Image (cartoon, rainbow, N blue to C red; front, side, top):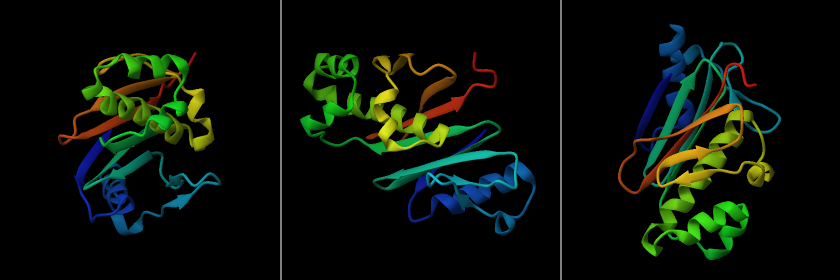
Length: 169
């Protein structure tokens, strides 16, 4: 697995090509990226997966040998109506946090959900199908068949990674 977090104006596809070239030994210019029916970028000519995200001044991209999803979000004030996008369990978690930690807590849940959707090539409509239980930055539970983690980021950002397990049973 290769990960790159950098400042924009580079593009996710340019970074993906460089990371895929590193994995495959090809030249970045030879790597063709297309999109699935759901809009997920893929490189079907190589046995590698990638995912990227951008927010604020940064973008991130990851490559792996199994399906992977990555979501980066700059922590910012969250309108209370966005809590409706969360499950009752997740809403209770956010509301139990001290007021000063709620925005970051929300984006921790948000990035986990987005990374899961990206990993499986799904659509945003599936957002509520993934329910997570957190204890601060520890992920206690999430959808079966996937592993999740938070990755180190610049201050004020949250980055979540979802990797499909090889034998999800």
